[in-house]
Image (cartoon, rainbow, N blue to C red):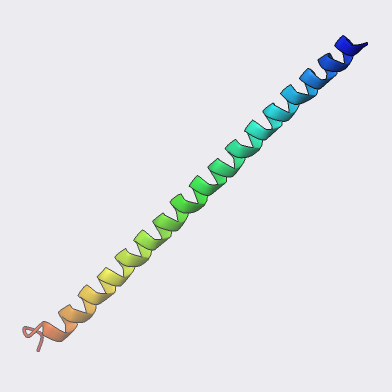
Length: 66
């Protein structure tokens, strides 16, 4: 009977280890995706601000417009 109990413990420990590994991988992937897309958003926001600044300064310092 003891070997059967040890077998069940080994099976449940293996299943728990697989579940834990899967959970860690899901959290890692979620973290990567959140950081990636937040970085993309910051980059596009910076690009938009740079374009707006360039447009505004071109309007101010364009002395050829009359």
